[in-house]
Length: 160
Image (cartoon, rainbow, N blue to C red; front, side, top):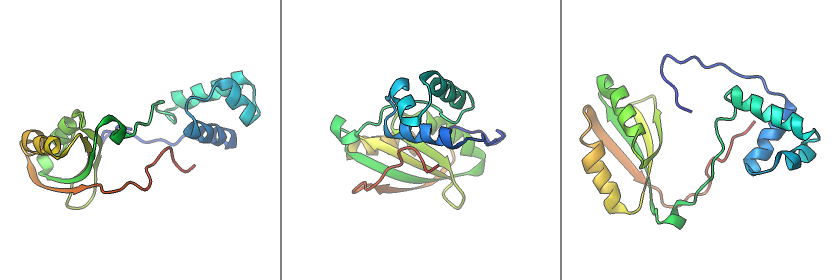
């Protein structure tokens, strides 16, 4: 979810049925309304209405496929802590958010103003990204990079 500093964050009340629907969708985002309705114990129309309401409220942001990067030739997963001069922070974040290599980008507390994850086919592609895209941004003061060795768990959905 993208957020701007001035954006207000409001909570949406969800009940146990909504939690069950979300949990089922986390397990299988392609489940039909009919099958989900049987699993939850509601009518297909009721389940569809609840999902639409959850989408309208912004609780469900989108449906997407989860891709295994290695299966499509992307072998380098790296995390970056990027220290940026405060006056350049938002411009740098906006530029990096548009980069196809960047999969997530967060403004964090502490000395590393931006925390970023990127996926690259190989080390050479990551090096080109660093030299041509990241290091050339105005206000970049330092970059710390850690390359992933093994993934034990990735967030798929969330605890409700």
